[in-house]
Amino acid sequence: MSTTVLLLLLIFAAVLLLVWGVYVGWSTHRNPEAERVARRLRGVIGGETKATDVTIVKERRLAANPDLHQLLRGLPGSATLDRMLLQAGAGYMLGRLLCICIGGLIAGLLLALVLHLPGPAMLLTAAGVGALPLLHLSRTRTARMAKFERQLPEALDMMSRAMRAGHAFPTALKLVGDEMGAPLGDEFRAAFDEVNFGVAMGDALNNLAQRVPSMDLQYFVVAVLIQRETGGNLTELLTSISAIIRDRHKLLGQVRVLSAEGRMSAWILCLLPFGAGGMMYLANPETMGVLMTDPNGRKMLGGAAMMMLAGVLAIRKLIRLRV
Image 1 (cartoon, one colour):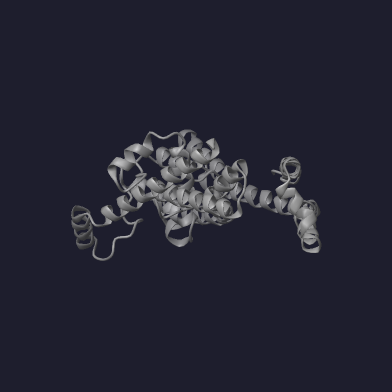
Image 2 (cartoon, rainbow, N blue to C red; image 1 turned 90 degrees about the vertical axis):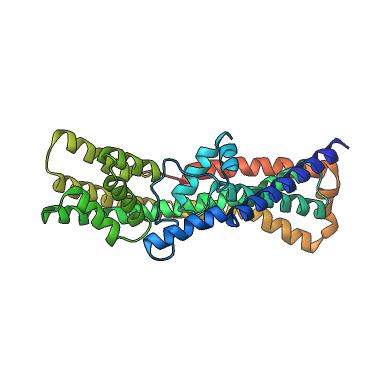
């Protein structure tokens, strides 16, 4: 009985938050004051205003609605999620992400009700479906950071050649932002815009390092900041950093080739129980159905799931080698 009451309360709260999020988004877009400001911006800039055109703000907005923004600022973990959105290059705010997660939570609860799952499994299913947007965002951030690191050596070489030709460091930063593609070009362009609007070079580079959690970029930022304090040949320094990054990537590629067998074994070991269970269910549904209907069977499934999770984490720790 208590599980049913808790489930109903969760569904009510999720639906209420979803309706509130939809209403806030609708009212924000229908706000005449916001439309008037947007028209003035389009008139001044001369065309459609994109989200990346006007970026000089005192703080990053968490939601379009001011009340919701203040509410999200007080929530624990909101800064971490917002930083994840920024690093993933997502074009929406934290409020929309939370609405999507709430929608996934509701879908997970409905799926669990349709499958007639027990109380703990129902909550785990709802939490798992609700966390899928966060998992997708994390994978997007990882892919974006990997692409950034692949572009960084070429960008450093471009900056070194530009400074050898007589350009200053901010001009070389702007050249990389204009010539390189996303995501590196966007991040370097944002750093140049900060410098162009009066932010100190050290602060702009530190902001760049905070937006992009890359060890290679941190080497570049630290080297440039030290060179600006002590002096030295910055062009040779950039060339050396580029060569070091390329060598590290080459070594990382060799490590991935040598660990490919371990990764393949991990995939096979993780998928084998599900494949074997599915084949056994097709051959004899009544025998496998006992695992879902009998209490002892559900306990065995829970124990097997916990042991599989521990095994996956152990294998992941073994095959993920850092260079």
